[in-house]
Image (cartoon, rainbow, N blue to C red; front, side):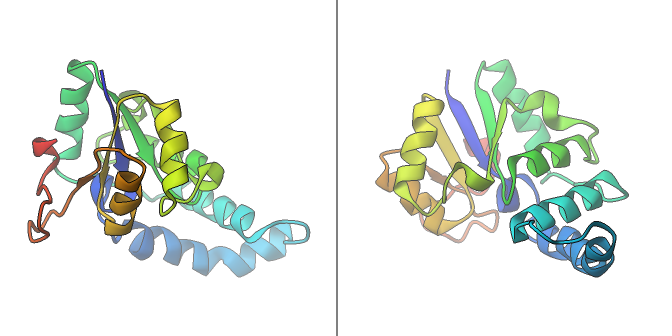
Length: 175
């Protein structure tokens, strides 16, 4: 049994989803939210998490990439575990899984990493994650994250859906 780790942006959802849907919603609501809740004693990350949570609890839904759902099911049938790496907060990523165009996909995910769990550009973070998840196979769309995971000795897979990057796979069907 292996653990397949999927990067949220670029692998699970379109790389533009957070930038084009969640962040604009949060930015538009920031002033009103701060007026209502106050920002005193809250970190910028705490405020961002609250705004993203509001966005994902409302009308926004996530559309997973077209090969995601069938491969989540395939990996589940094979006995593999699937973990998502999302930022800025694992709880937000978990919430995002419940609000998809395919209903609740959290049932096909075994865990979520994100936020304070470590910097994906740091090989030491990958070493910690591999300790928590034996047989970890990261599938990533960010070249820097792939390099860091490989520096930690993990068999990281670069996913380039356009199929132009050397040594990359073009679909989760190849993992």
